[in-house]
Image (cartoon, rainbow, N blue to C red):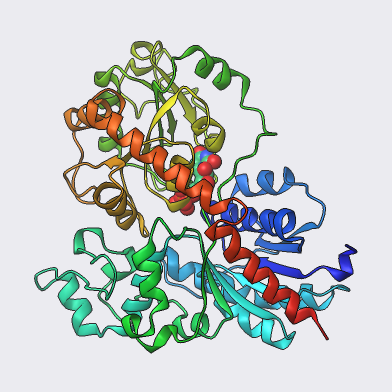
Length: 474
Ligand code: UDP
């Protein structure tokens, strides 16, 4: 089909690798499975890894455009939550999105944004485009976002301080305060970030990076107007996932590959806290000791224990004699040289997880990491840090039973080395871990079924494609 005859969709990613990666996957799938032409917009200067991800992605009918970065220092307070900053960055990027689309000869007929980009629907309306939301997280998270927009401040107060009441969401798993969404922890109504509920419900559909069989009752609740109220009236819900990177063309770093090749099957624990997660110095020390005490093989993506901005890289050259950086226990590298490998800052996660030697993932439970773990049949140690990660950890441990979780609340307390050792041994050695492995492999099969031709996610995305095609007709 000629480019001009294909449906053309524009996808807008908000800053953060956790948003850009699934948007890129959606774009690639629309091109390869649904015969779309796709243009992806992302915010330049986002994350150092974003540039290399974009550069390494070449696909016919997929264009990627960097929108200039915006200075929001005068627009948000220094203590604003990350979510609030994302909304402002996306709003300030609208003029460049608008002029970029206006300059296109072959204009897109649909705009797909993530949860932070719904302001861009104003631009979509100006150009007569269809409007879709792509929730890069799960259906439960979306239900909580919508439900929290409807409940009053009094209830938020009750959820927060007065008895820490759980959020009862019709048709969905209830949400305990321990696991609540980060934005709901903020009791100040003015500062609490607001998702664009009304804009999302006035869209042509909401795509979710999940699949019917994984979250069937929550998806049903989202579709049922009586359960979630009038907010979601008439908005089609499309579970189209799990969309994760599975790039067979990329080659693992030689040193990492050689090390993994030498290990026995499913014997290595991969430890990573996503694109931005960092631990306190005290917590890092306990984690290092816990890994060492477990005597299990590990690959640990390490960042200095500070609030370094995203994308600041470091070298492990300073510190102690054996190269151990001074924020890890002295001699750690020497003592763990036969069992562990430390990778500074950023690792090729999807390739590590897909290596047959990897058998466990200690993760911050970002939704992409969670899906990548499931798609590689790897059970997890759930170590949530921010955003909706505590909700994800609750689902993984209580509903899917494919993860263990520390008993303490990680934001307030330190997880001790003995507990870490125990969790590592549980998923890597114990019978309990074997049972989790079986369950996660069942989930992987169910996910693959959903994505294959005729599966629920395949059909959902085909429906979106049909709507866009129809919109093209004169
Ligand atoms: N990631 C990676 N290497 C790293 C850290 C993260 O490739 O060292 C990727 C990871 O595979 C995932 C994404 O970055 O696709 C992180 O998304 P997620 O939703 O898990 O967490 P976030 O970083 O958004 O908190």
